Image (cartoon, rainbow, N blue to C red; front, side, top):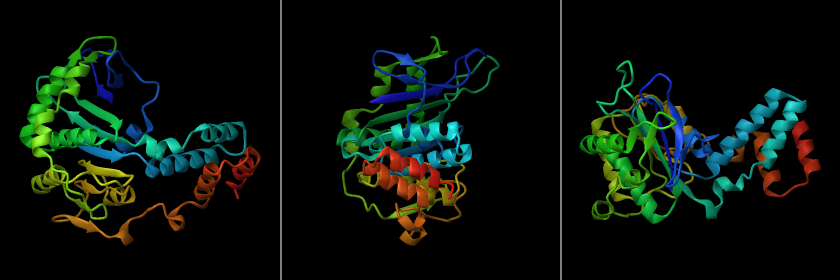
Length: 308
């Protein structure tokens, strides 16, 4: 279980920063995991939000698209070749290898009322859990997501996280690793969560409201997470309906979704389903080349055709 916490210290010297927390150490990571960076892009990070996602082809697609755009912007020069070389060094199979299935839960902008900085501003805490996609871990993340979405449980979760994240240390705050692991009671998880198979293709979006939040909580209690390789649950204040559809979100709530209740998204509405017709031509070619172990010479040829 990898745990990342974003917060700040009390004094002006300790602004917001992410730290990676393990059983033995706490440090600022040189770079956040790609899955954490991409899930954070789906929400308004400074507002209370919840994201549950599974790694897989959506991350590989995103990485390829970003890399190709970067190469095109740099042009046919030393910087462009360096960007291309960096892309070739990335093991894209790590995003969707069946032996490397991961889940992430990101809960942002937890605001303990008594947590203030040196000029009495509210201090936020955001937390991410990244773990192997086992049955036990899935139940743990489902339960933590439920706690963040239910008003009464959120109060309890906020209090416990506030106690686990302590002022002090080299980064302005420290995290009690064991306390974070114990946020969810295993007995309560087993008692309240069912494991009915979900309808992975029943994609629904809606406006953030207490009623739809309650229905989403009931879904998380009743159903296992769908096996689809995409963001599964996104609840945030500001995110467009088109972005949620393009990201293939299974259940999404946002104030920018124009609907009275749940809006069922048909397959024809979904912008990208790893479909060649919807993919950038060069991205599709590069995917094939990288997955086939093609020679470096032919990859150099591809580098040039990016500008054709």
